Structures are given as structure tokens and as C-alpha cells.
Length: 64
Length: 192
Image 1 (tube, each protein chain N blue to C red):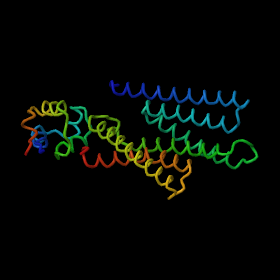
Image 2 (image 1 turned 90 degrees about the vertical axis):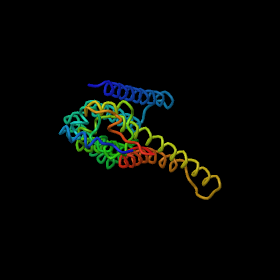
Image 3 (image 1 turned 180 degrees about the horizontal axis):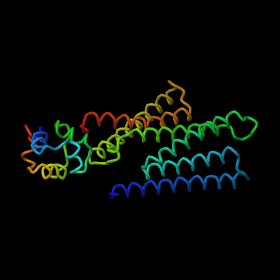
Image 4 (image 1 turned 45 degrees about the vertical axis):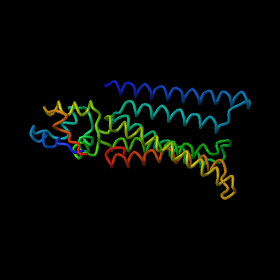
């Protein structure tokens, strides 16, 4: 899984800590999300998408 | 204070209450079955109750002042344990001194480590809960496997394992392996 969270976060000039605070998780969770090393729940994925004014499809890319 | 924190605190209070009740019931049973309570049993009971109260206050309060107070109490327990260990003329307190020292060190470690950690570590998000749950599960399986190995080693007379060694191994293995698995999965990012 790849994510575009870092790209969308940079557009909004948001730090990882700020995004973590907005969605109610630890900063390290955002770190691993951006690296594509953590599979979030649907709720967290939705919360991150809302926080970044984006959609889950735009943020998370699954390659078979 | 979030719902998770309130729930966690309630669980801590409940655990402490059950622990203290178990100690008191144990002391009552000892009193009625042996006609008295030895100094050692009384001191052990005091150590366990003090530890439970201190750890509950520290873990639910989560304020720096509580951690400092816990550090001081832990240090005092270590000193008291050292003094008790050297006062051999107080009969019936054998082992209680080392118990006091162990309890004091546990409290010291928990409070000092808590003082060092960042506030973010207090946030329980879905990832930390998932990793914690799986780490405990892996720790259980490892401990179970170890019990099986120790049983066969002892049954086949390959290694003579007495009950105290076996209990000591299990008491140390389960929490240490849970922490180790938690550290490992945290570093990887997820459980997979």
C-alpha cells in the first residue's frame, strides 16, 4: 500500500503532529501511515481524508 | 478526560481494590489458620498494599507531582528494605527486606520511566491498542510453549527443574516478552 498523505499534508502546510492531533492518534501512527507500513481502520482513513480535505481513494493507493 | 481514560482508570481502581482485598483476606486466613500473623507476612502485606496504592495513584493521576512522590516512596522502600535486611535480630522478617527492596525498585523504575516519556505516549490510539493486544497474545503463546518445553525436559529427566525456578521463569518471561513483542511491532509499524 502506498499513501499520498505526506503530499496532501504538505499542501495544507500541516505538520505530522498537527495532523495526529486532528485525528486523535500519535504522531508515530501518522509516520507509519505515510510510509505505508500501517493499515488503518476505515474510520481512521476517513478521518485523515477529512482532515486533509481529500478522499480515501486519493490518499491510499493499493497495488496488486 | 476521554472515555478511554475514564474506563482505564476504573479498571485500575478495580484491580487495586481486588488486590488489596486479596491481601487482606490472605492475612485473615493466615491469622485464623496459624493463630497469628508473622512479622514477615505483615510486612509483605504492607508492601503489596503500598505498591498497589502507589501504582494506582501514579497511573491514574498521570501528573509529574505523582511521579516524583512515587519516586521518593520507591527510594524510601529500597532504603527500608536494606535496613530491614541488615537487622537480623528482628525474627520472622526474613525475606521481607528483599521484598521491600524489590517493590521499591519496581515503583522507582515505573515512576522514573514515566517521567521520561513524552505526553504522546499516554495517547492510546488504534495502532497502539492493536500492537499491545497482539504483543500480549504472542507473549502468551511463547509462555505456553515454554511451559510445554519445561514439562517435557523435566518429565524425561533431561533437566531437573524445580517449581520455584519454573515459576520464576514464567513470571519473568510473560511480561518481558510482552514488552519485547510490543517494541518489535512498534518498530515495524504494524502487526504482520
